[in-house]
Image 1 (cartoon, rainbow, N blue to C red):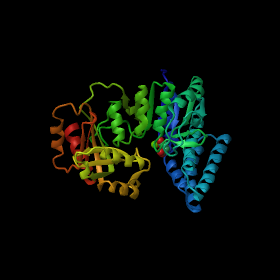
Image 2 (image 1 turned 90 degrees about the horizontal axis):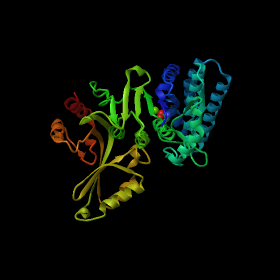
Image 3 (image 1 turned 90 degrees about the vertical axis):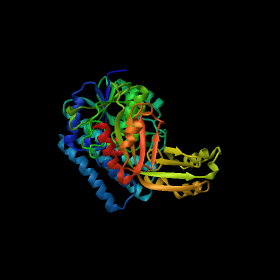
Image 4 (image 1 turned 135 degrees about the vertical axis):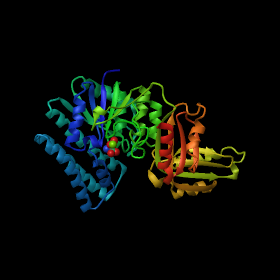
Length: 449
Ligand code: ASP
Ligand code: MG
């Protein structure tokens, strides 16, 4: 364990020259920050994804122009550096070439190669900015150490290889200089570029923290920490100063969009605290996610996940039978679908689909092929436009009176499904989408205010 801190800055924190300067202030104010992990400047990844989907020439030029404008605006704020300008231009040319290729034929590997340019450019600009402020810094290509499998678009890190490579190539450099590197991207065995999935830079920071034995990982974003619920839904929501790993992990999986859901895996594994704060207002403090917190409260937070689909499978064959659920889960697994919540009765099983854990995203999860296969086994009912409200807390399934308190508040609402007891950290309700905000407001008012 060292004093090393890994500081990660999200897209809004490197969106333009002002944002980059504020982020540099944060880095330079703490000598323990030795590794800086950056996202692409805000908006750039979306533009690159659009290019990777393949578009005709006019649209392509327009998208590339938008990227060039965002990056040139930052470049223009720096003292002229011929080397940097040439490098940025070379990467912009790559983008043009790769998006022409994508217009002919798209592929997951090509997409990753293309979108990686956002992080490559933002890190080049940031290194120069730090150097022009008189501090020595080194641009480091994270693909040298971030080894992943070849599941393009959602690659999984090889943590053993990462550890080895990071100890070899990265650890010795930290003593000498500040390292600036890319979030989100990696490379597979053949050296082709991969990505860890949208929002994956948080995950990169935590993985590097683990590989380097860091003392802390700081995630700088545009909100000053984790709140009891989304302040846009409940203005009275409060910032949580300290929260346990498992509670924060529940929040991330249940839709609080502050941390990439995988971020806490390496943090928990290696017991590295994670701090979340706003680069716009570092003085406002933030939330520390760590192993032990003082007196964890019964009710901690409320998370909301919209656009949930509920599948209810009815089969009389389930009556006193065995193996039915195994068959259902086998089919779902073959279609690369990750199940989220589940409840059962004697002749039916109801489940929701996990869009982040599954292979494709969004509505395309429920393919005709899947429904046909399930229908050969049982009667299938599909309900859409539901929302998942998760009450996160501690010892929820062991404390007395939780039911009375919570269900009392839920009285005016229709609850489509309840999951309670599998984890002592959450109690989940599936409610009609149009009720979701009211449910959150009512629960917050009664349990948190
Ligand atoms: N730039 C990538 C994205 O927008 C990764 C990240 O921001 O974490 O998804
Ligand atoms: Mg981001």
